[in-house]
Length: 167
Image (tube, rainbow, N blue to C red; front, side):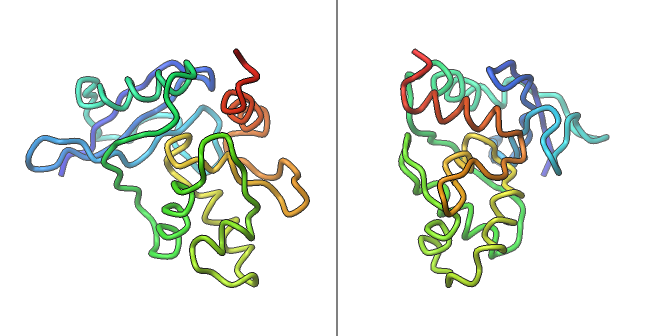
């Protein structure tokens, strides 16, 4: 499989989008990252192919989300991670638009015991699909704006967008 990429401008800055082209030519989205995001690429890796056309649906859906016109994403996703992380990331996708949960509540959604809250936090912090898998909707146990790999200011922006306070 070939890894492809493109970039797009957004309210969060220039996003790097990457994925793989499946044998049938379809895209499986692997990552959406923002500049300076902890643990994420700012630039494509050597050997990746620039293919903006492959990301047309991704860009259309992200633009609609940022414009406040769409609340969901319908994209083929292929994030790379451990089975545990993929379970947590799947639970992220279940958090409704405009709502928030705590790390403990997210763990429970993923079938994890309360003692796994630190591991849940680690999985959320490693989420490779910024915005698409809404890690910005996860708060600390006391409702605090804790940890967001792309920065708390971006987390606040996304939550304000979803609560309609940007329009």
